[in-house]
Image 1 (spheres, rainbow, N blue to C red):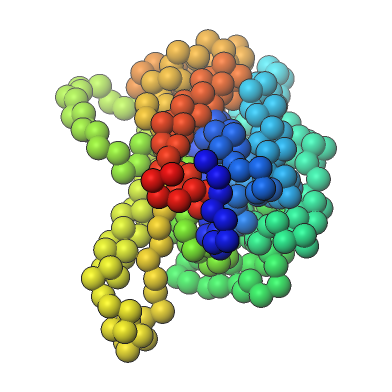
Image 2: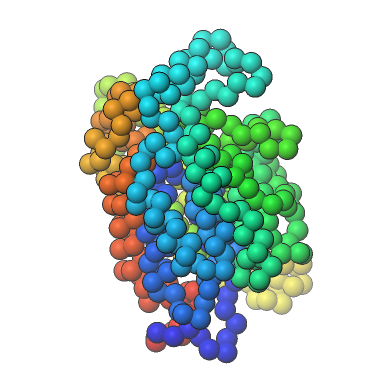
Length: 389
């Protein structure tokens, strides 16, 4: 299959959502895309939008904005060899120190001093990984060369309550302000990525400009919005839950009170999965409405809206079920800390924190397989072949 000759390629925005260790699934999808990528295309996604763990993947791709295949190779090298200690401290001393400080802060009403970072786990290893292994200056190089239009990382402000999207792009890409969400132009660096991936309570907040920021999936009511503001005319979305898939929800009778791990997993699902599903349903409704309105009617009524085509690739299997097969891979110190979560009822929480290579490789393979099953449709959507080719 060859890319379309003589036709303008669509400006596709890549949307990478949050989900902790679940983001390994995204790498499998991206690997499949890199294998399908025509030789004459250096970067299929001129607009890249990342949130939480998706912000880490987005930063790597943006730093390799002139060579998508190289960016995917870097992601694969990291994710297929991941261990929890690459993301957060797992040594007994580090775990004990952080959990003790967290417990003390809870007893004292949440504070141990203005400059003391309080969280259940210490993500200093991830900070070191980002600062030493990723050259953020090459993002601007890719923008200057025309291979990258813009990249964004979304964070959540603990003081303002706003969903803040920091973006770096070509001249002409403007900041925006909507209800509870804004876009701010500035060079993307490791602090933005760390802030975006700072799971509430689990990882420490990060100070940027005037306030502290946490995980970008919190209060992100429109996760598709940043890519559209940056100029995307269609969206390629990689989810980490089973969004928009036809599957029955089990209603199981239970008499036992939900464990803290079960509640925590439920909260993380609410943060990472629900907003994307709602936003996708909203986009589908808008597309259906616009399809019934003639272009002249839209112009007469001053409706500068247009239909946005999209493709969503999301797991065909429940990732929490996969996680339970690899719980034993976690370091002993973390297994002790998460003892109540190491059961089926706590599997959601485990699926977000299981940064171990066997689990990550299983998710990467699932992402690869799910994508390859849709080769023809995705090739046509990305503008790499004509209908029926």
